[in-house]
Amino acid sequence: MKYEVRKKTKIAQRLEEKDKKKKFGQVLVVKICAESKDENKDDILEKTARNIKDIAKKVGESNIVLFPFAHLSDDLSNPVFALELIKNLKKCLEKSGYIVDTVPFGWVKKWSLETKGHPLAVLSRRL
View 1 (cartoon, rainbow, N blue to C red):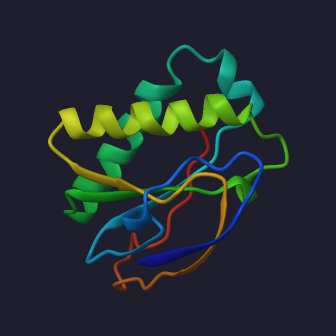
View 2 (view 1 turned 60 degrees about the horizontal axis):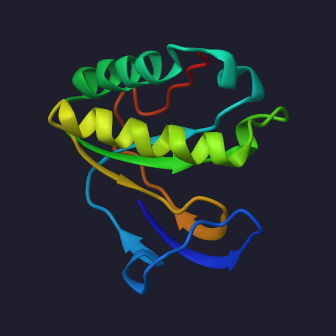
């Protein structure tokens, strides 16, 4: 997977130059989107982390990339909530021994993804 930021949106997080373009080796890419109803779920962080760890275990991957992907819903949460959820999810997964990186939040990006042809290479979960 690789990405390069193209254009900043009004909710774009600040980036250092080194984070404007990255290429990853073999990773589990998790496209993530926070919806408005998630803001009222006390267990959303734990449920999300548990699901990601379950999938990572099944595919045998300890390197994870969290990819904010607002296009998964038409009922988005507050962007501040969404970014905080992603940051906390990263910390939670790292505490469990995973190597976690993130794709920049709130940027228009050029990106590409290649799957390894595993039966679980493409999954969808709604929590």
